[in-house]
Amino acid sequence: MRTIHTDEIIKNVKEMCIEANLYLSSDMKEAIGKAAREEQGVLGKRILGQLCENMEIAAQNQIPICQDTGMAVFFVKMGQDMHVEGIPLSEAINQGVREGYEEGYLRKSVVGDPLLRVNTKDNTPAIIHYDIVPGDQLEILIAPKGFGSENMSRIFMLKPADGVEGVKKAVLDTVFEAGPNACPPVVVGVGIGGDFEKCAILAKKALTRNLADRSSLPHIRQLEEELLEKINASGIGPGGLGGNTTALVVNIETYPTHIAGLPVAVNMCCHVNRHVRRVL
Amino acid sequence: MERHITAPFDKKLAEELTAGDYVYITGTIYSARDAAHKRMYDSLMKGEEIPMELKDQVIYYLGPTPAREGQVIGSAGPTTSSRMDKYTPLLLEKGLNGMIGKGKRSEEVIRSIISQKAVYFAAVGGAGALLSKCIKKSEIIAYEDLGTEAIRRMEVENFPAIVVIDSKGHNLYTDRGCVD
Image 1 (cartoon, rainbow over the protein chains, first blue to last red):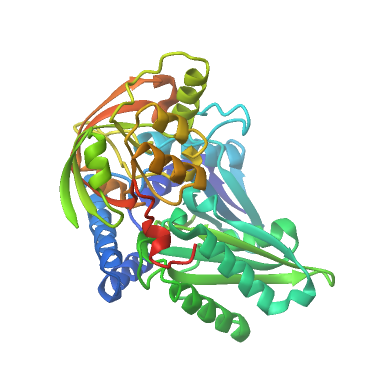
Image 2: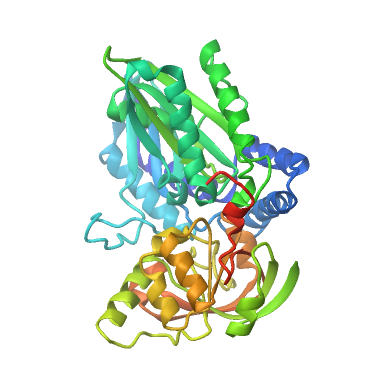
């Protein structure tokens, strides 16, 4: 059985926290660059130009792209044929977050109790989703999530009779209500199906997909394209100040659901859609 | 219209600014976000002093990342303004003249902006590295225990912002016919 020591996990998580907050993935960078070239709105074009400049300054000066360096959200896929040695895995991930947010000069944005609201001062605890999968590898994906856009996310427990039109309305209502608050151009993650929490996790997972990857299901792919077109026809534009780039992509993930339900979750993400994946 | 302005500024300038104006702000502004607003609000409601004179001042809704050595401040973009809505009318009553943030404001805040002849600016959300370059000095003046949410006095130079809500109540987010 393959063994991975938690020292290696801590080191990787630390590096991933810093990397995610300083550099966007190439698909995100290209999409923002393309939008900047093609944007028709005068203010919108100016703002997209500033976002490109911002990414360069961030990389050159090692300043986080956005001051909201987020809550550290993880999707961990653990091979069932591997073994973790050292401290408990979740503790190791949190230790990596602690070290990454300190050494990377990242903002500590977590309060320990949601009502008492005292900052934990090290950005822990992280939010960790585990999957047990075949194989002997450990895949760690970090997606630091800012709350300007998180606060504009919504969940809808639709009825089966609401159908695809109900789903479209839920997504569009959420994006339009978010307007400038979610820092457009946004990435829209949608989860359809499952139950109350499953669709929310799907929506978050949808944000981590490469922008070029479309759904493999023809009807869902069509829905992604139709929603993107409708969102960009709204005129909200970059920064909510007008233009034809309101969203860069709509990513939808689905899961089987109950005969009585049609849950839909819409997880909004700003243009600083950060994620770093490593396989150990 | 594009114009260079200095902060703090008086009511005369506040009334001249119009939704859609692209401004470059130079001068002194203060950072304060959720926790600092709550604390100032609670103090004012109890009739206590707050750590800054609000008259004619500009508050930037900001909680920066820590500065590296040799840097004035870390990433320093705006946070969502609507979370400050509950506290804003009272601060405007006490003389606050400008706010820099991002996103929509409540009807109550808009009414208060009109009655107090104030102005609401948006800075580009998610451009914290770029905006940090316009901050030339930064010093924590109060609520240090709040960490990133402490109140900072900052000297800014040509800080870019857009007038979103002006003293007449024009609103760039909604008046363009954008979906709201």
